[in-house]
Length: 468
Image (cartoon, rainbow, N blue to C red; front, side, top):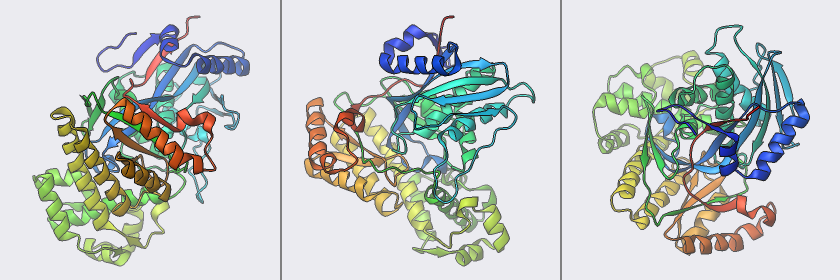
């Protein structure tokens, strides 16, 4: 495989066969051939991710520490001459679609109904098309295969957006720069209404096999972080689906953080309209995270802020508040928990720094686990994005002597746990099966390896050429 500096790796089909499940690849290739009556010219593989620590802080400007997992979005593709996007899926539950390259219509979800899967793909396509001169957009034939559990907090939707961005960029000879593609993918997912911070897309493109990535923003950089050799990470799917694009829960937290940041900025006599991210404000204040925490603790004194409270503090009218400071799916909100959200974000940013220091210096698994437990407590109590099933999994883990936390946006999805040996991780997985999964009506024992499993850091997005 070739891997030039910050460019996406381009390999051969043989390379893909060596790292992927051959049965899955054959099913994908056969499905593409059967539907489009032609061979794919290339394949794209984009991994899902697990965030070890640093939840809900990327969109506040703070570093995070994720790693890529083996589960991925794998797609087969070829350019088309008709300037039409032909999009299919190997899973028959996901319907096919077609649309002209100049008539992309991405449906933003309403009434808590999740968007059709291909809308995420269209986000990635549109992200690249928006960078190209009008009339230069090439069409594609695409078949998608995904084995990342959907709505499980492992970044299935963002991996699909990123895969579409990469495939579209390759077909249109635009760019194979990892940082450029990560930036575009993060921005274009907002077409579907999600105000994310870019972590999922960054790790999708910048992941390095064998390492977690310490990802920083403005500019986007990824620094490989070695994990202790005796640290084994287990992912367990609560089997409770959470789609952040289908409700206002995720965007509400984003808005609460932005409002809290602006109130803090105004109290410091700074241009608050320009400052919506805590990290940016902290930089302007030239203070440490610990001092910033004390500042937020002193200023944000209310447990609940009303619209009128915020309008009064910021000295704006109702129109500016609703149309400039809220998103379309948060305009209905009347109450805001600014203090709790701010304290979680700042304290979580401190935990990321501590986790990275422990991982690279002492490598003490028990200390890493303590930080993960603190993270979950904060996500449950201050950010209120956990779920009773996630809490059950964490409680079972705690009683077994294993530290765990929710990973991803929350409201369902997965936990990630840390074990100090392969043997203990195996015993822990059996404990979860006995105490949790065997009592879940949604558990399918034949799919156990995709529901609860040990994982290690995988490589990022890559392209594989199919010799013609």
